[in-house]
Amino acid sequence: MLALITGASSGIGKELAIQLANKNYNLILIARRIDKLKNLRAKLKNVEVTIYQTDLTNIEQLNKLIDNIKDKKIDLFINNAGFGIVGKSYNIPTENELNMIDLNIKSLHILTKFALTHMDSGKIVNISSLAAYLPTPKLASYAATKAYVSNYSEAINYELKKANKSLKVLTVAPGPVKTEFNKVAKAKQKLKALDVKTCVKIIIKGIEKNKSLIIPGFKMKLLYFLTRLMPKKLILNASYKIQNKK
Ligand SMILES: NC(=O)c1ccc[n+]([C@@H]2O[C@H](COP(=O)([O-])OP(=O)(O)OC[C@H]3O[C@@H](n4cnc5c(N)ncnc54)[C@H](OP(=O)(O)O)[C@@H]3O)[C@@H](O)[C@H]2O)c1
Image (cartoon, rainbow, N blue to C red; front, side):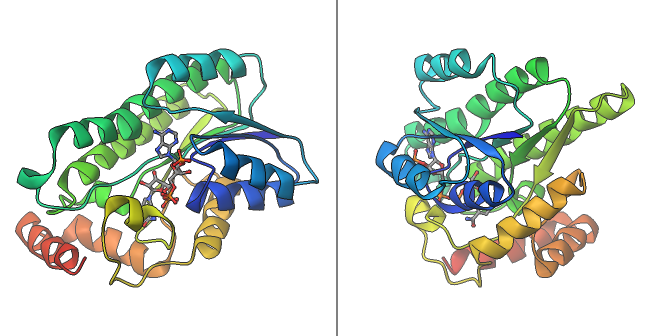
């Protein structure tokens, strides 16, 4: 079995690599920080690990990556690379947001389309966020990118199901997880975050069970269901208060 993971140099992607290697998956790992990928490869001795240093926001590098992987038979294609920007929208430089859109939306879209047309079976796993399901003041553009990821992935999965294809697209929507995410987003984490090992254990269990929407942690599942029922005004007020703690 072969799994590809984008954003494997830290956080959820790195832990996915470790836990999938323990399940004997061979791996293709992608990120910009090649030293971190090399260190990780050195630790995963029981499986075959191929690494690609790729900035997924750079279209030439993205196309080169696609060229490198086009003949591989991938069973699990995990679009995990992503980052957030915390702050008031009117203070965030537009070019930073466009860079985030290039990674969280554009590269994920291109790689999902590649996987859709190259994989007959197996699973595409797109890492979204719980923020996808609620407009989130002070994390507005990030939450909007993840709304794209969730809506796109869930809709494609339904198309595949209706066409009786064995290929699936699974969506993962974590709440706060202890990774480098907050450092990159320049946020202070005051909310209780899930430990990354536990989060990834739940993700892998969900993948094995073919769950179309995987939400790690009981509290986050509860929050997801509450947001389905609450009026938008209440959601905006609650998420503003939560984000103000950061
Ligand atoms: N942690 C949370 O609280 C949380 C909650 C919900 C959803 N998520 C989502 O989970 C995913 C993983 O995030 P994480 O929490 O594990 O954060 P993380 O520790 O910061 O990991 C992000 C990964 O993405 C890679 N990446 C960033 N920019 C890239 C680029 N331009 N090209 C290629 N790779 C790039 C990073 O590698 P390099 O820097 O080496 O390129 C890193 O491996 C993201 O999609 C995030 O939105 C996280």
